Image (cartoon, rainbow, N blue to C red; front, top):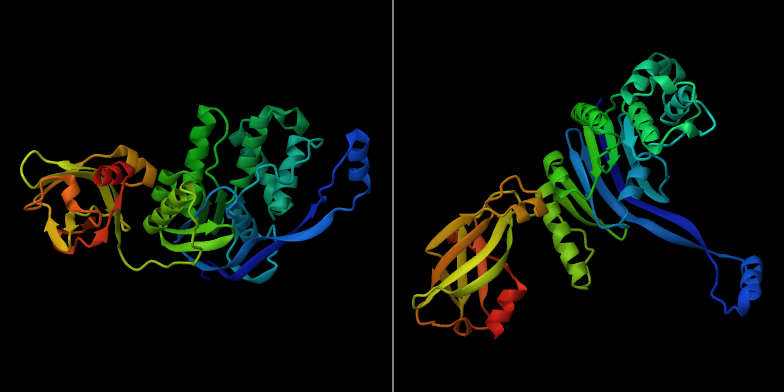
Length: 381
């Protein structure tokens, strides 16, 4: 039986209750208003018309800023929330590492909570019974077996929840951030088990802000904004879209939420410095560029007054900052390039319509690279 997740126009609306604004004169008026005013019920759309398919072998990253709908989508995929409209089809057994305390009861013993949590995960008591000792051993809580859960520290509860949740290998694994809890010894065991469970899963869906982790683990990605699908494609192009979207948000720009699909490898990057090279008509350019497939482009060209000038030399520079930020596997994405533009002696001579282009080779340098603020200021001075 094949394993897959298919979402078709998935939408989730939830009700919220809001108190109307009213002027209160003193404490008495405020409390009377809170007691007498009926809250107004309204619907909020958390997920809006999402369509995608995850197939066997896929490791999908869910990207987006806080509040974009990442955790909500994971809970819909795990059937915690039922979609308001649209259709969700999940074929295969599913394991969700979303809420480690799901099913726990503080007044029950540790042993009893293993059964409570297991049942909440859909496991049978007959299956859990022989697993109790190994779960306690993994969590390091053998001596706490008959203690009430509320007497455990938050770290011990997290370890217990993790041990129960990962005691079974499922077809599909859903994760909200990479799970980590406990001291160094437990973390080493937890990491080994997580890698084993991820490796044994036919589908993995992970929501995380750790770009490096997503780059290492995932081969596909979707980008959410305001509960809508902003992008779907391979992990490299999805990370590119996510970083560009965050840059637009920081610049207070309006984001276009038309869902995009990848159209082959695309080159992108930033020009951080351009200056005269000490010889007549020679300009030095510094920056970084990659393509959406993770390759390192080697073509740089200047387009000045409609004429195109290709770099004579391009030297690779290690850029660990860009590598970590984009989650790249190769840090040689920086470059220093030298380009001759006959007859132009100063930066101002390059003109305001200057374009700096990148590509996989000099003959295919046709992708505009973004000019950094310092470069724009230097050209306009």
